[in-house]
Length: 338
Image 1 (cartoon, helix red, strand yellow):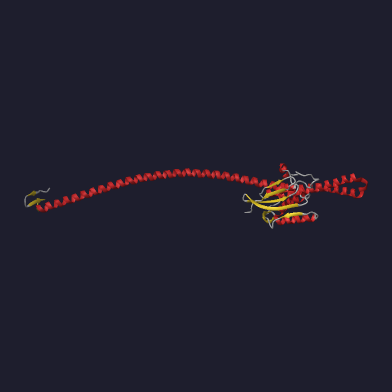
Image 2: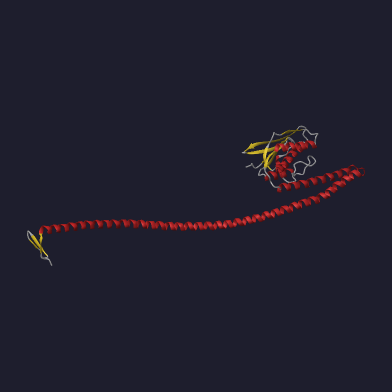
């Protein structure tokens, strides 16, 4: 234990005299150091509090982040479920589509087989029907040539009618076969000139009937897009009909033309022939439907049906306008070339 005696001049500590001023200075230094340590401790406490405050803020932010992550995970689960549902629906749709495609393939195969059978049947029937018709026509002609004097005028008329009916039936068979072929023929599109086809048809008709005088109004060219063979059949039927139904006109006129209408090209064949009553216009495009008797104008009533079938196959439409005694106009459109 130290004994401290303080007086003016000295202080005794641990049995040794110490200068009082030095001792007081040391104590003051110690106190100053303690004050500094206290200040440093206060600063440290404040820093620690600030760190704790920052930690609380970070903790709150972390909590928000965790909530956000949980929300994202929940949304992810929802979206995942949606994707899985979509995948299931797509798988079902693909399966249905494959099934439909397979069904369509089988249907096409069946249709192709049926078409082949129908074609074979048609030609077989046509051949079998032509044979007796040729016999009827041949034997009737033989009777007329060899026994005409014996059957008399009335008998000759009967035999002539038999021959005409046989020939008409043969033509009907040919027209029906042609109609069947245009329905099944492969469609080949290219740029063609309808005016050139019409001139060729008219030239052939004029050769067959050179005594007729027909005014033909045909532009230099009428360009269309379609199958050359099938549209050639269209021109043959339309120009042929116009030629036939103007046969009783002293100044016959046949016109081929085209015009723009509602953003598409309309092609037409017009004549100033017998015409027809518009009340029966729908009959024009029916099989075996005729608006004139065979005595007035020959024909089978299949020509315009064939035209309609071809135009429909080209994605177009066909219609007729006419007036009794003032001619007719057959108009049609074709699917525009892309």
